[in-house]
Image 1: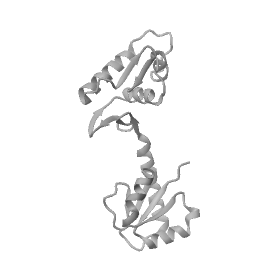
Image 2: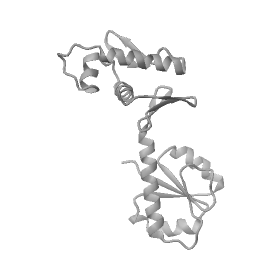
Image 3: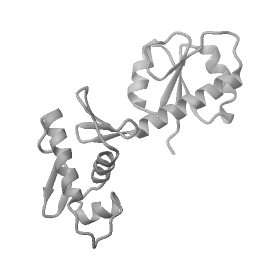
Length: 186
């Protein structure tokens, strides 16, 4: 299991308090100052939260403004924010040079956003997870819950419409490639 990390930014007293009770915590704590803060963030990339009295430009940051504070309430706030960060991280999927947000049903590239239907998100996500081309009958079964005997062009129609949307929004005509072996995301 990937351990969640809390960066205690320029708050020595808080770090010492949490360090004393670290066996009871569901996260690891890291002490950081201005000098090493950026390097720590780069090394961790994701799955961390910053706790600070001053750091305000960090997206996933808890600012402690009031003193004294209850340690139990702080730990509860940290755990809630870690869950939110984890949920957000899991909802964003890399799809080639795109980001697919499973929750908002959007695909994003270079700050350009395209809204998708739930079925389009399922289709992209399923094809993207596969390391091999996916045949139509497998998409019918896994994405649409259709049986093999059904004669339908649902998959082809959805892929045609999805390709058209991607082409119009991102000028990418090669997002989903089809071959004799099936569909794959480029």
